[in-house]
Image (cartoon, rainbow, N blue to C red; front, side, top):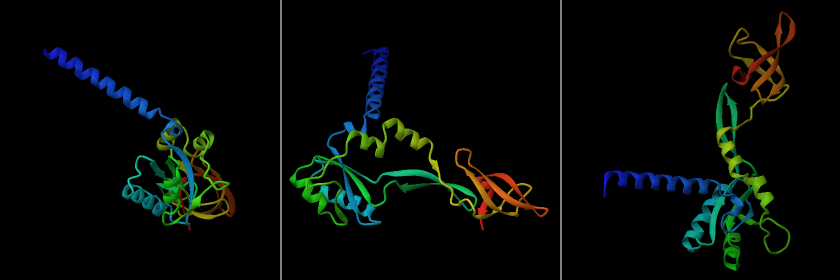
Length: 210
C-alpha cells in the first residue's frame, strides 16, 4: 500500500468521524431512546436521588432500560466580594429527570429508590414529557450550546440595597442601588456627593455589599 493511499484513508476516516460526531451533536433530546419522566425528590436530595438511581440500575442491570438521570441546571454568574463567579443552580429544585423505557420493573424500581417521593403526573401511570416540555426544560441542542457559552448573570444585590463603591473616583463611597441593568452588567447607584444624591453608573464588579 502506497504512502498516498494510507494518507487518503486516514483523511477519509477523519472526515467520517467528524460526520458521526456532527450527527451525534445534532440529536434532539426528545429523539433519544426512551421517554423523559419527572421525579419528585425530597427537598435538597436531588443529587442523592440521581446517585441512588444510577447505583440501583447498575446493580439490577437495567442500563438498557434506564438511560439517563439528570438534574436540570442553569449556569449563572454572581458577584461575590466584587468578583464574577460562575455557578450552577438547579432550574427546578426538588425535581429530577429520568430518560427510560417505562415498564412494570423500571416503574417499581425507580419510584422505590431512596429519597424519591414519586413520579410527577396525574393518574396512576406516569405520563412522559411531551417534546415541547422537553424543549422547555432541556432546550434544543442549539440552546444547550448557547447556555454553555453564555451563562446567565445573577447579581447577589437588589434595588434599594446599600453598597460600597470599590473602584474609580467614587471608591469607598456608599450608595443605594437605584437600577440594575442585567444586559449591560451595570448598576445605577445613588451616591451622596456634596450633600446631594447623584446617580452614578457602575459595573457589577465596581461595588460590594456592605
